Length: 345
Image (cartoon, rainbow, N blue to C red; front, side, top):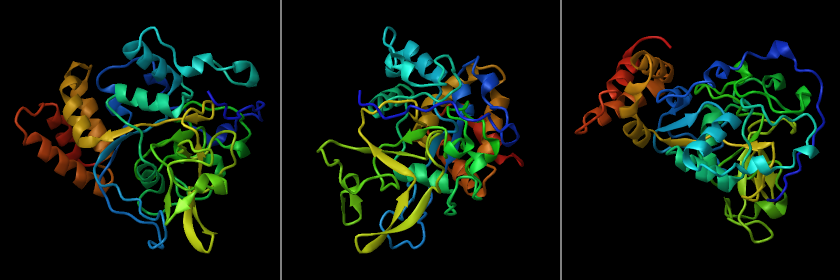
């Protein structure tokens, strides 16, 4: 595996006043058929472009509804998935040289997992999911309003970046006030870079990495190998806005808080969150929800959260009506429909 250069000494003490208790810490000890649903955001199909929309990479539209992880995949979740789907195999991170990483802990199951792009794709498939495209990821990070930071205002202490001085990852979901708006995803800035399926021009890319042609990125780096993007920054990277407009070679384009990496790169600063087409995911998984404790109310609670945003509410109800009209529709979809129709989060 190609190293990604992650050595980092343990930094200053955590600034407790900026943090909230990780909301999933108590959930890590259990996993049932509804647990994964509770850890997802709903992203409705929507057209959106950064202004000025004429510039390359301005279009961040999402053509189909998605479900997306609220949290970066954790180490505990990664090991559970390997036990379930690849018994006898170990994640690549288990073979990593931890001696070179001061302050990092092997046993921190609520820290974000680190894995290569290729491994992340395989693990996503086990979940019936995939890596988000860069445009899908950015659509959620800028919140359909062109926000420069997922939470809106320019306040670095809302993310685990180098400025905070922690020097290691924090448990996923630590920064309650740093959630993306309106989707509620945690750590889309800082903590660990997040793999996406393809590439966008990044602040941290070299000219050779970018290799642009008519506003589109080629699929290879200067060495002829494919390179893909990781977005959002990490605990050992300076905080940056999600995007900016930067002049380049006689024209302006949007550049993003991203870096292009070889798909085999591996190190504690690069993790992943995953997504799936909502229509396919809900149809496939709904039938299993009834086996969980308190399933109807938990599913309704998820729908209320998803429907708190008016655009998402309309898209979710339309999607559920379509699914419920299919022959053999799981009755559990009705719980989602009931929750989406209720008032309040």
